[in-house]
Length: 322
Image (cartoon, rainbow, N blue to C red; front, side, top):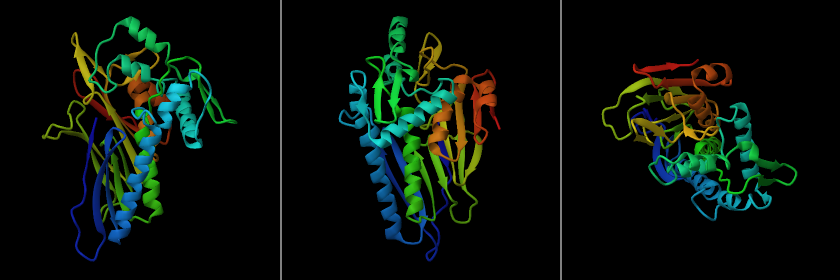
């Protein structure tokens, strides 16, 4: 599920300046809309932010064979892999999400992504034997982290960690840190429209207005239908949904959001949006809410987060959880 945001029009000379710029990285498009007093300082902050996104792409990409992430996937099944402090602590955070979500969030889903054809593809229906084979190489408890040596070891050969469900959120938070350090007045940072952070507020507004699309509508549809609107001010929103990546087989719709515990795409939900102070949190928590459903989320979603849920029912069923 992608979202749309409202960006104030250009403002009169003598007031805050507005710059907007985009970068393709980490398999998506990053967009920054920023306000500040000095054009060169504002452009410098955006340039530095995009350099950070490029650095993270080179570090965490599972598409680039020479990235640290790809080397870890290749080597950690054979022997302990010594990770950089950043990657190790990132993995520790991922393991914590897995514990809190009862395994619904699991960064080890790479084998499932591949067997279902969503890795660089549009999806396919695999045989059950293929799913069982992939599941034998999935499971966050099969990743052994040694905090003393900063080493990562896979307890099963052939495991494949996939950062796609959390990496964008981490990158957006790093960009926001840089914009804050560079004294940017306010900014909206978006990673593909599915992970967004509103930093401070744009001129003459109380925050960044963000519209949530109808869960069955794709980004290419010119006639926007919205189901809700939020205002982001020092707040993030991330979304997950079935509208962008899915295929239909035998009358059943299969999306790219897997339940890593049974190996099948999750059913019963169309889209989920989560609001959180940190984008890494909002992005990570959309998956457990999507997979485990409304009742589970009512009891287990951290109290400082909010969720907007659209269930897959005959009649439109979209509502805020809290």
